[in-house]
Image (cartoon, helix red, strand yellow):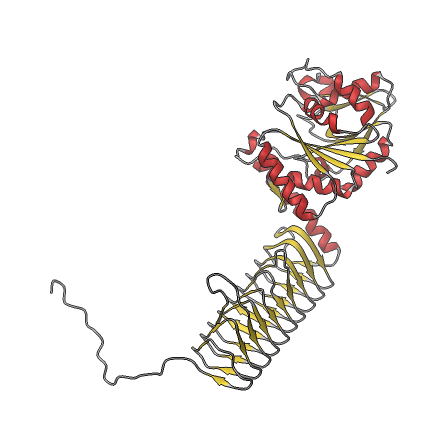
Length: 471
């Protein structure tokens, strides 16, 4: 754009129909707060600044939006202004007006309308061109409750009439105002000063700026789109659930268009970003969060939850596996077999052809090519070499109550079942640890290490007997 854009996000409403102590704009769609999705879109527009208008639950809203914005690394300056009391949409924008520079365009968005696409807003800004009032509109078969776009015979926009104030003829109009507008700030400032509350709701309507623009000879343009999902708002849990499903259907369709095989497109949830190579197969009821990258030929079994992870080509993630790399990230190497019922935590870095079986947990550990932990085991803060076999029931005791310590298991080691490796400790290459051992000292390469009590057998042992009742 040849002009700077300042985004105003209206997020002051109470959201009574959500029936929740949480402010409406902090409820989540596809894993992100509604208003946070709006801020993400604003960042994608290269906006000069973002002003969020808060009111109900202001402290909660401001804290909830400030932290995720910082975490995402978005560079758009963010500031908050408060609307107290809430006297309408026009009154809301009046609170933001003092912090908006005159040389830009104000883009007004709603914090409970989360799925507007950046390309749509770019088109609206282009229509504004730094000098016109541009409104985002939509034709709806049932426009009840929405403000109607009133046009002259030549098609020019003349006014927006709120549903409660509309005549029967005006209510028959199907073109509605979405709540999104782009307007030169220098003009908006004067129009906001002329607002009054002489209407059915005794509120200051932002939509009244249209009649002022027309009276002042400013061109008012309606940029009409056909995609209702982009302007759908959330007022109740029912609407939120419907919007979630509509969004996920769209996501699933896009994945299939890229060649991903989904066993059932109605049973996938994407709550972050998902990049897939060729011939990826995803079974039902899988959830993807954060940043997930999947290589060619990967198969994801049913009921998996995968977040912040890179899965290399040819790996198989069996059903009911939980992977969450958080900030540190997790990696599953090429051809690895994971699960079922496995858990990979932050810092799990698994090499090619690693096997992690049922009820095995890996945290902050690296496992080199061909290493295996097939059953009921824990590896925390460990460095595991190639071709290690890690027995069922074995654990690394990595925490001494105050600090974490590292375990090193060198290549070709065999760890028997039910062993405890007390860190810090190194198991030398090619060594063997006998089942049931507790290892507290480093072992030599190739050595057999056994640390357990000597077996004792008592012949003809008689078990204790229960006493007779009343005895």
